[in-house]
Image (tube, rainbow, N blue to C red; front, side):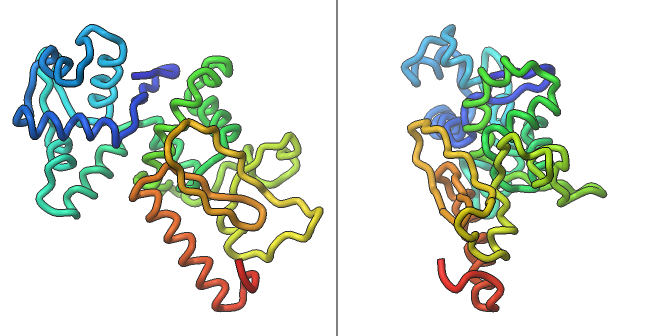
Length: 252
């Protein structure tokens, strides 16, 4: 697991952690000793790689225990659900168990950030040093973006309002802090050549499959997952509605 200031975060994605959880459920009936699980994964139970995986599963809330690793109730619901609905609800419960990710999602209102904006938000939330954030950002971004579609947006009195200090489109943005403004891309016309349009930062190639949808002036780029597909489908449906009403460009 990783840590920025007093905020802990998993450094293994939720889907990868659930894969191990499924093995615990199917091969060990939901409970296994640390040494036996490490052997099943062909890892050392004292190695850093194995420790990172177990630490991530604890932070997600998939397992509990030290010497004996046991699936939690939500972990079992996610890896061995009775219905698809139970699986979806359990995955959402697990995704919301990381306070850092919850705060980030609330400020982003469910929209994927570029890496510069994400780094500034992490600095604002955690108070960690910039060098430390820069060192950990690739892992944090990869794990966070994978569960972003599962996280709720802000429901407080300022819910839905984006951070005004970072990436709001005002004069403070002249340092090149790009942010993919999905509502603007859905409702506005295609930008004229030479006009300013917010463009998302090209995603860092982590070797994992990604889904990309390019709009005039920007793109959506998310890790390939069912949750990411749900977000993109929703965006495309809204854009289709705008086109059919004549409030957007005549064609993609």
